Amino acid sequence: MNLGAFSVSLNVKDIQASKHFYEKLGFQSFGGDISQNWLIMKNGSTVIGLFQGMFEKNILTFNPGWDENAENLEVFTDIRTLQKQLKENGVNFLSEADESSEGPTSFTIEDPDGNPILVDQHR
Image 1 (cartoon, rainbow, N blue to C red):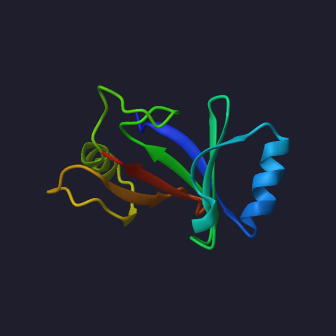
Image 2 (tube, one colour; image 1 turned 120 degrees about the vertical axis):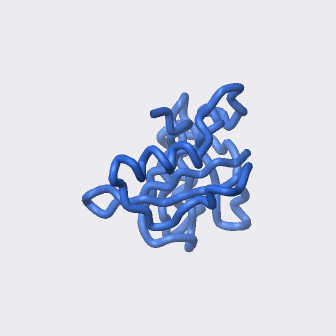
């Protein structure tokens, strides 16, 4: 099962302080809008998202259809197919994608320790 590009979305208290800290670790701004309290940063192929005031916990994020540079992949498994496979495997969902839709959508699941996992397809 290929879930797409992986990143960690961090719930931060002060986005400016977090940005400066991760820059010291070699991360550079890659996307987002710091004036809207979110920023995507990259170090090599490692991607993190900084989000201030948008959610309660850190989130593991997968993006079907994208590589680690947020570039479209020619071939990928649609999120609705992934959702169906996970349901067949007995995975419980916190939120679901509308299986009758097409294009961008998302779903959220949780691992056994309560860590949220967002699968977010942008195309």
